[in-house]
Length: 265
Image (cartoon, rainbow, N blue to C red; front, top):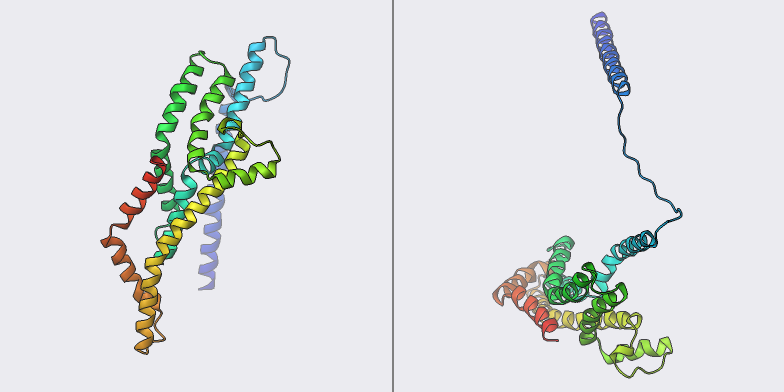
């Protein structure tokens, strides 16, 4: 019996060795045929060299500027649009209902992203019509295009920003009291807009928590009066909270209210 097993082992090793040698020989033949022919391999070079035409330098600066904008695009999308308020409200809603990770973070972020696209679409159309298209057709300069692009976003942020938050950052920046909105730098407007959005989202979250908190308190009181102290109240209250949310069509009310707050704000 032992001799038979040893023979099988030796035979398997021989087969593996033969297969390995066959594979190596095929690979060497392929390399020999490959290097026998002339291949044109692409190359990429990045560096700094002397330019003969000022237009080349201008194009290079435009490319660097475009890459910088693409790098900052996530921060611009999150902090200068309606995304912050929507994402925070949806997170509060999930905690108020008590559904743990349902809906998941990916669904919340995706829904907030598409609602942001919907809310900001008129503003982006203004940017495209007043800044991007004239600049691409060489009708306006880059400086004028940037000013025309930032104005619709500034107007949107001013409508959602509280004066108290603006005055806070103006005092911390130690600049002269601005006479109008045009005198307020964008570097001051953005943080003021962010904290205003967070405050608004927290207020909406508090309003969302109240009805679900009442349900939790009622269920906990009933279970305590019945002597069922070992039964977690969240297991009993969760179906009632889901039923209440569905009966009042909660998603329709919340999404509609937030969209109207931006459109009408």
